[in-house]
Structures are given as structure tokens and as C-alpha cells.
Image 1 (spheres, rainbow, N blue to C red):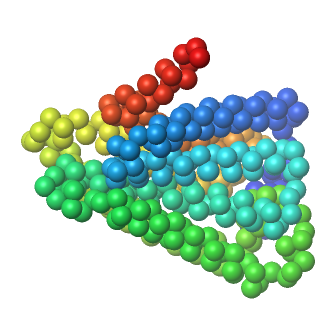
Image 2: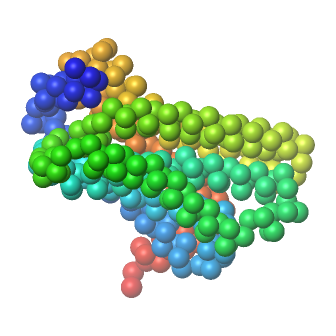
Amino acid sequence: MDASSANMTVVLQYRDSFTKAVTKNVIVVVIGISINYINASLIHTFCKHQIFYMNPRYMLFIHLVVNDMMQVMVTNILFIISYTIYKLHVSICSILILLAVSTNENSPLNLVCMAVECYIAICLPLHHARICTVKRTLMLIGLIWVISMLSVLTDLFITLATQPLDFFHSRVFCLTETVFPNPIIIKKRDITYIVYLVIVWFVIFYTYFKILFTAKTASKDAKKARNTIIIHGFQVLLCMATYADSLLKQALLQWFPKNFSDSLFACYIIIQVLPRSISPIIYGVRDKTFRKYLKKYLICKVSPQ
């Protein structure tokens, strides 16, 4: 029996009690609504002021926010389905899984682009306006989606080629392993994630250490970047933890088989939800320009008509 089958067996064997299941779902829904409400406020503020959508930094940020909203929404739906509908048609489940995986892979790529933009702004300020244009930023966002979609569509094409047609009309417990069960997909995903880890961390370390070195010797604005760099690094670390998700689940299955469902819930909160709560802190609260306009929006919203 392979790891995915073992995961499935344990989940079926140690189902949560009704009280625990309700508690977990309430926690997930409340956190998801809270994060998406805050992110929706950020998007509204961004769209209302031209100063933001003419700035590549804020464009990359708002793309990250939109991506996070989609990720939280889809993963919440999948989480609730696992406790309510339980089994879902493969065709429907595959769409949700593909969207969840692609948005999940987008986050580290987007953070790398933000790190490079920050590096250019701090270390090459005279070239920033020439290199970081609105058109190039939009092309970069498009490239992020192309990379992630090529990765997940490959899984779909392999499944279409290797699984019988009846498989797509069957009902399964909606997990990546059950919808895309071919061992080739698992190996391909592991190789892809290793490549992502190497590239992303190389870029992150190079740009962040360059910025930290500049921040110690240059302007006041460069020094202010240090705290942002630390938060970005923590956010990247959490996002990249998703690349070791399968290995972590296998380890938890061996260590805590009877509490595997609780371990999966903790992994979901730490790996999927927590990174999506950091973006509003970086730009919605810490960034002076964005905070100024966000406060105006919130004050207008709470003030009596």
C-alpha cells in the first residue's frame, strides 16, 4: 500500500467526532471569511486609487492578495466538502484541485518577484523606473500563471491518458492523490518542487542579503526595508513548506496515526492559512502609503451615512 492509500485509510478509520468536526469547520470558515474580508478591503483600496495600479510593487502585492483569496476560498470549500458531501465527482474535484495547486504554486513565485523588485528599488534605484514598468509587471504576472498552469495541466493530461473514462464519472474523497493517482505525477511533482525550492531560495537569499547589506550602509529608506525583508522571508518559508507537504504528512502518519486528522488540520492552518494572513500586515498595516488610503476607506465605511 502506497503513502496516499495509507493516508486515505487512516482518515477513514479515525473520523472526527461530530463536535470536533463542527469545531474545525467553524474555525476554518471564520478564519477564511476574516482573511478574505481584509483582503477584499485591500483590493477595494487598490482599485480606488490610481497611485497603486501605476506602481509595480503594489501591482505584485495585489496579485498576491487576489491569489491568496482564491487559495483560501478553494481550500475552505475542499475542507468543508471533506466533512459534508464527503465524496465528490472526479471531474468537479479535479477542477478544484487544479485551482488550489496552481494558486498554491503562485505564491512563492510572486514573492520572488516582489523580492527582486525590492532589490532593484534599494540596490539599483537609478534603474528602477526603467526596469520595473507596469507593462513588464503585467507580463510577469502572466508568466507566473503560465508556469503554474503548465505544471498542473501536465497532471491533468497524464491522468486523461492513463485513466479510463469511467474514472472521471466516479466519486472520490477529494484529495490530490485520489484525483491524480498516477505515480508519474507524484515523481514529477517532487522534481518540480525541488527545482522550485532551489531557484526560489537562491533568489531569496541573494536579493535579501544584498538588501540587508545595503540597508546597513545606505539611506534611511533602505534601513526601513529590513523588517519587511524579515517578514517576507518568514512568509516565503511558510509558503515553501507546502512543497514538503506530502513528506510532512507521511511523517505525521507514522508518528501520530491515531491523531492523523488533527495533524492534517494543524498542517492546513499553518501551511495554507497562516501565510495568507501575513500579506495584509506587510502592506495593509506597515506600508505608510497603503495604510493612509486604507484608513480613509475604513473610516468612510464605518461613519454614519
